[in-house]
Length: 371
Image (cartoon, rainbow, N blue to C red; front, side):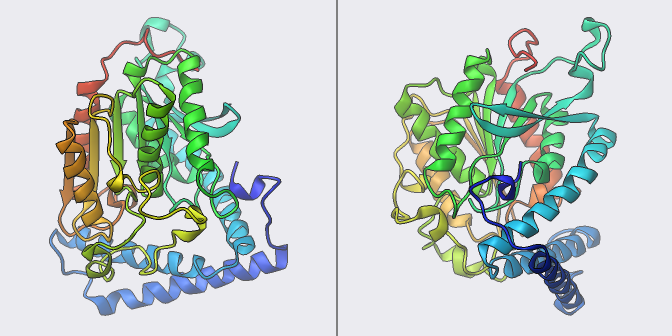
């Protein structure tokens, strides 16, 4: 499901949606035409990585700049078209590249997408003894600044996590703002987490992960789970988490020209009157319980706007006695492992991530059922 498919969500008419898509194409073309004038070959890495970073930055920045100026009905219609394209392209792509299959499911009333190794499924392996073991279950909360994207759009990145960690991944299609501001999304995530436990997933084999807004949501989830008396997950994986909605660190302005994010990062639709310094929405202002909070992996880029807030978050949870592994790659922008999986910096992050997960989730196929 994508947000536009929810009955409560309004969308634009077909003619207006068509004009919107034409406008998007024009914005992307305009952005690409700027690339040669920005000396894309210059940078901290090799020629391919430097050019790839410049092109990716400009394309994503053009997409975001165009999208943020749309009425919400047009934004949702555009998002639906992009999701439909991903539904056609992604399943065969992840099958060929990572031998991962995608299946839809609804958990605690929240739709989502399972990503699993084909060789771990009874449907594809006749002999149970030949099945690949599932080391754990990852509840993934996709990014999109709390307002956009869908599970299918994240299936390629999730599939790479499946391949590297030998875990199964459920990408939750939680409710998004502005139609569903805080705390709707975090409540969806908490309900899915507890339902996975009810399905028999051992918390020692359950991981929570998220990027950007989904990373911020993942940290908010930790607070809700602790309050509910739920067991902590085995680990927390964060990729460029949006964990300081106050947006008052120097990197917000200093890195605005280097990052993929728009200079006017939208947070108001999600907050809906909640103060951005509230620890429930900005983990950098929270006080985590060191005895409960799970071991945490944090990845970020040295050139991203959220850099300083992420650094402060790492310091705060480390002071609380929480085991944390932080990887900051110089010269990289927001969620670079997702947008540039081929880059050397992304490969280093993936290697560190796989090692982190393997150290914290024991390989025991009996502990994690196939749902």
